[in-house]
Image (cartoon, rainbow, N blue to C red):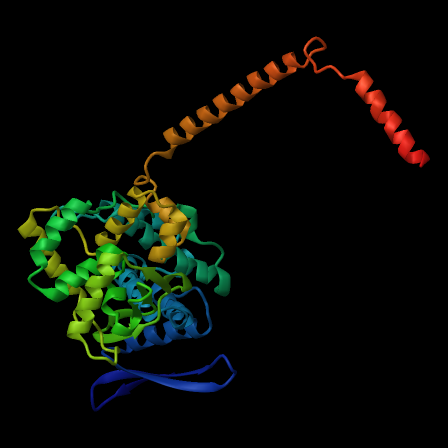
Length: 398
């Protein structure tokens, strides 16, 4: 028996012995159980967990999943994942045994997520539903790949939502200009929004910028870091992917704007944050400017969409845009395909033109062929040819 009572505190505790990954015998103690039954249940669950027996609950397996995966991803990525799992997935699956969860159970969970409405009657977005399902499926995939779960019930159940999501919100250039005039009274707000709109930055990239990131002679800004608040701690992190690290060329007018701003407001060492503010600050300022200007309210991230839509309108390719904003070109094509001008009509017109040109060439070839018939072909001067042959023979004789 490894369950004991603490007579002094009138509570129960467990002493649990196990062998770790390296074959080393260890012991752990868990205290504070109100009843012996609670202590015994914890001990049994811990035994299953340590022996990797999938007769354990989903909640217990999630602890294993966390230990295996957390150190492999960015802390911000894990924080987002954990929030979704603990608020949307564990409440439904937490006490169910891993080996008992079926595709039918997953379908019931999907139904709950799809039918959810908040106090304002708003449902989850299609992209959020797709992300929730991906998180659940990732946990089951881990169990299949490393702990011999027979199959992934989330995969069998099928996906929900759509990665593409709904309509992308963005401002036209006229709407943005109306908005920006209303926040010019606060320099940091003005220049921050200018960076977001004219360079298509993410808010974390903006908040991490320092003067040394700018090269005003080359008119570039280097994106090499990301500002995040993780569990209350302010962090400067490296970008999630290599694609996120990039140099952005600034328009001439904006390059001059930022050079004047930085030279007037910051010291020469260049290492302090240009925008020592928060995401919430810019959200509040965006609400203020939207109300004052009367333009539709959009999210901070939608300024990035606005930048991309503006580049699409200017005729730039998905590859060129992806390189500028730190995306994969396939993502730009997939997410913003409805914003690209309908190239289908233009393609058809160009193909018509090519075909017409080809037919014209065929007609011209026919004309040439007719001209070079026996009657119209150029005549050979036989006398002149004979004279050339004689002269060649004389040259050889010499």
